[in-house]
Image 1 (spheres, rainbow, N blue to C red):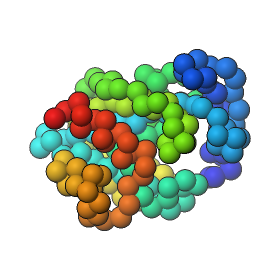
Image 2: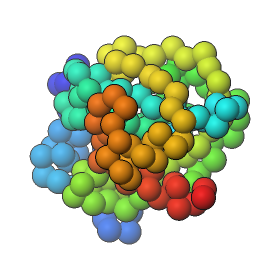
Image 3: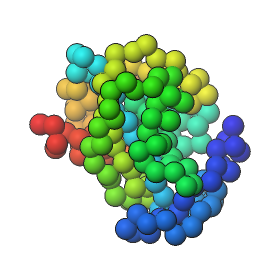
Image 4: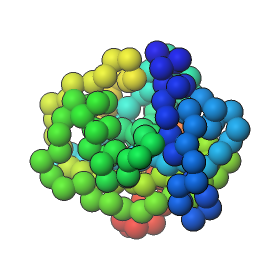
Length: 175
């Protein structure tokens, strides 16, 4: 699996998020080049957020809690077509609700030099989890995630740095 993901073709972008070339995912990560990703935050009708515990098989951040779903934007694709594809691939559903674009995170060393477009959708389930990508999914109350991100509260493991950045930005918009 790691070899397949490592050879996935992604676009390289400049500081303005304009495509300037493409390389394999593995090579982009090795060289620390800027590229694109999406994160989708899934909420239920109780206003809890679904988080995924990344598979221990993942080449990065295995066993850590992350956004409901996330993935790289493949070469030649855009953010808006990648987000629903990732929902279907990772969580097994096609959102009947509009994916609401929230904001775009700038690339940083901490997030792997990714422009990350963040979306929101509402869905109570059921989910069909991609077992090769996700070890577990769980609903969390927003106050628990706030404590986990901002105050080091730790209900069950570590959060990815990228998700922490996204959550802080999300909460500035939603509070």
